[in-house]
Image: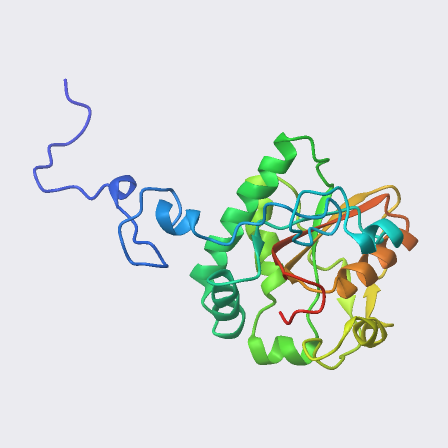
Length: 246
């Protein structure tokens, strides 16, 4: 006896629907909307500092700066160098609200972070997006770091605490500033949410691009001073050298 009604019309099966690559437009052969050739040609970050992920010409444990002045954060995970086409994808995501591009990058970042977990990287207790200045949030309409943290939270099964950090002071844009000016610019710009308890917690900051590391350093120090045991940084890309615009 048939338990389903007879239906002779074509049935749409969404699992068989093929996607188009967001970079070249060809049909993809991957779960994400990016084809294998385009994914392989992304500027993957290979040789890097084991702490800040600064691209290096040869494999090394630490870059000179991290060896002489270790940062407050423990480890940076970044899949790519901030170069074409990743720089264009990030820019279109942030400044043109092209959310599908950001979602694609976020899913690939989640895969990269999971790979590091499989290789022994300690899993954090929570993901914490870098807060955006109120004026820029009004102009843009969203915080790209918050979206990335949400997109990481599901696949990695790590809670996202998007209100843990607050931007309490608007500051001039960081792009045109050198590293010392960036540090001065960020002084007193951030605060913890009232009543936040961080004792012995391992947290991971989430942002789009790591440039000089001034923002990550400021926030990591704030979290550690409040009782956190460890702070890592998960971002989409690392600039080729400190001070490059992002």
